[in-house]
Length: 205
Image 1: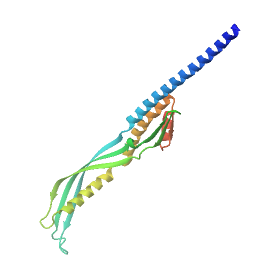
Image 2: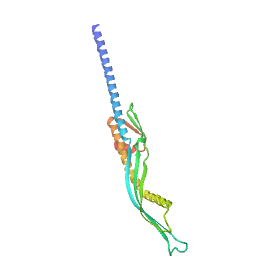
Image 3: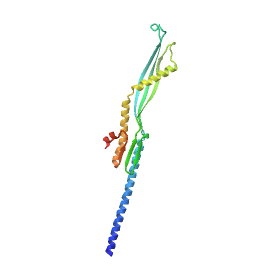
Image 4: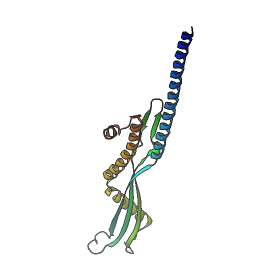
């Protein structure tokens, strides 16, 4: 009977030890996953910023117009001309505050649902450099506003939007790559539902 009690005690002790180990490991795993979630969430928070690729442009815009009496064009014309200096700052931006990301800490998964599209913005600064006008052919306010508008449109057409978008795209991939690298380090998986998934998987998987 004594031996039986010893066997029972050993079995009970073994089971108790196994259960204790299981709960301790489970708690450790839970705490470890929670810590990883906080680190990943912090990384995502750091990414919630504006990615900006920027270029500066400068140009001179000239406008000339003539005014003459019908039939006397070859004899006399009242001319007016104006020269404008146009400086412009062009930006390609990704507003990552609008990025839709979900953390699934149970399955250790990062789900990237959407990333806002790139936006091109131009900030022009126009100044009148030189103006020459005739008494019979003067600039009015509407003339100058129209010329200023055409000068801005002229500069906007010279902006290399393709290059700007490429520079912003490279910055975006680098930022998302940090998240991919962190997930790989902790053994998490990324479910990327955006159009950047193939490019990032080739680089970081």
